[in-house]
Image: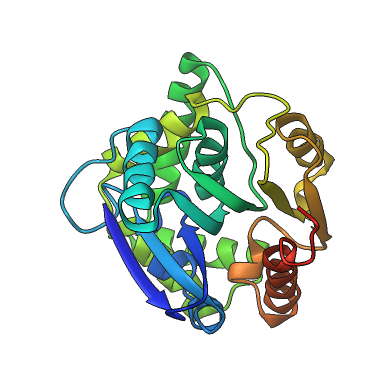
Length: 259
């Protein structure tokens, strides 16, 4: 596991948890500098995605390592944590398990899918090859690049960064990560005193995700944006700026007595 601390030394603490098959450098690369101007950042790369040669074990084992780091280095408490896609599952587990405390749990337009073991196994068999199939094949790489650009409104440089990120990790780590995320459940109606839950809702994902957010968490603060899944991280400034403004509002809520 890799934990890099950067940004404002005296700022509020904010942990950044990347999504499937990503490291934080790629996933949050477009916003690291701006977040670091206001917050003390704790940037995480999981086992299997940290350059150590280890294989990603499972969601709970990694959650326990994150909890230990927060306990050992930040007295068991953070002002906030942002999860990108799968990273939001870690935010949910940190809140649900209650071994550490977050004032603000920020969920970056996640799907929060859950399924049984057979379905999860089948999905991982289908999805993981799609994330790695272009490795060493220029035609497939070009086709994948065009899909990323069209769906997420990425430019060429950003699409190349994400493909390079997917290609550098062991497929077994990606498979374990994807599979164990699906079988690691969140409870319904999670509520923890003095923790405020915030969702960045990407409306183009569909209303079923909005219903899911309300199912898992009691009275979440949901902010709606006209974008695709996590488009604020790689789809251009028109998406990035309003989401960053919303994050600042989330983090200021405790000061105004809103929590």
